[in-house]
Length: 468
Image (cartoon, rainbow, N blue to C red; front, side, top):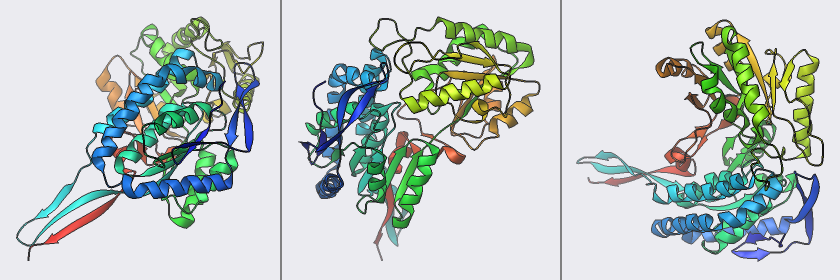
């Protein structure tokens, strides 16, 4: 793979140190990524701070360049796809689609209006509320969707007039660094700086005196650390954290009719989606049928290296996550659960794991109570719907959930009772640029996407003009 550099002040920046990036399909290091020094991070924030002065002043230019950034991402999807596949593990077509999807987010925000709200217009005064940028934003992104989740932060932050220093996960730094190189050909120097490194670099970013906001997507544990690091300087934060998303199947469905959508709501990106279905509650009368329909789907899926024709699921992204999924499944089986299909790693190199459906399992089992973030799905039976809703809500998480019913109105009534940021009916993972995305409880603070995501990168100012 050709060398990929960090981007600071619009230029490619070499580093004295590098770290290995593992291809999860082989379990072996396949490339080296630049390891940002503390001095280089200071330079990135200084560049962003300097660029902010002019960037915030010209909204028309910001919109024009966000359109160009979108076009650049569309054009580069074929180039970015193989880079992302090799470090993340997802199939090549999904990797290229993700790069294209990042362009869609840029295009959406390029045209989104920033409202000015008139709150007084009388003989005494004209007063309006306007939205101003915050300044420099520190953004930290995860390894499951590195490009599109970066665009969720970059596009609204830049439209609002902020500048940014972005750090991808050390498991998947290369595609994001390449995106930084591509966008350096579009954006003025310093508007978007992209650096890479390990957890220590993230700690330097969150405690750095320059950024006025931290936008973080990742685990609950790290999100709490980010919030604590931001508190002494009163930095604003948006935290998009974990989920343990329930799906509740009602007693009026045909298991065969919902199996495909329900399965992919859980197993998209090999289950490595913060808002994916993590547990399914099914009425006793339909339990065997739903379990078998999901298991049939799991058995039919082709798992393999991302460039292989017809592959639908790749490997788990990294060894710690592979070990966690393996441990949670083994714990469930030891406790009496049945792996109807799957239940073990796939022989050979890399972090491949069989798509797994777990039956005869209940709340109190770790894989039901915790977030597995991988290709294993527990299916739990219930007798009483009110009890199922209560069990679905009995968690620190509150990212999303779904209800499945032959009667969409009935499904909506149940979905409205879920304590989560997004409640779907007869769907899951239906996400779009215009739709706010965020969580309740431990699943996050603030939202991303839509005008609400834009507002998170602004602060209010009252502009008051006396007429007296």
